[in-house]
Structures are given as structure tokens and as C-alpha cells.
Image 1 (cartoon, rainbow, N blue to C red):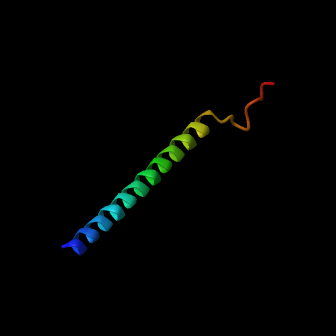
Image 2: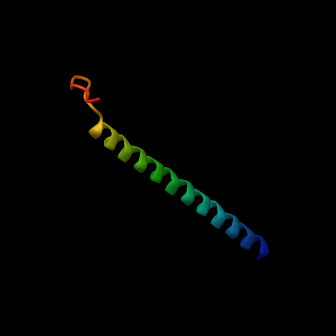
Image 3: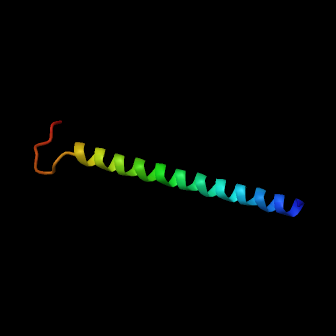
Length: 52
């Protein structure tokens, strides 16, 4: 029985690590896309006159 408990604990740890990595990746991707759209929206056009 003890071996089965260790496998279960190892599986739980593995799945929690995968979940944490997935959440971090999704958070990074969302922040990247949002910041890209914010920058492109407020970026000055090269043809417009620049204000000093």
C-alpha cells in the first residue's frame, strides 16, 4: 500500500507542476498580446508630424 501512496503523491506533484506551468504560460501570453495591442494602438505613425 505504501508504494501506491507514493505513486499517488508523485502524480499529484507532477500534475500540480504542469498546472502551474500552464497557468504561467497563459498569463505571459495574455500579457504579451495585450501589451502588443496597446503599443500598436498608441504608436505614432511615421507620416504624422512630430511634436517636440
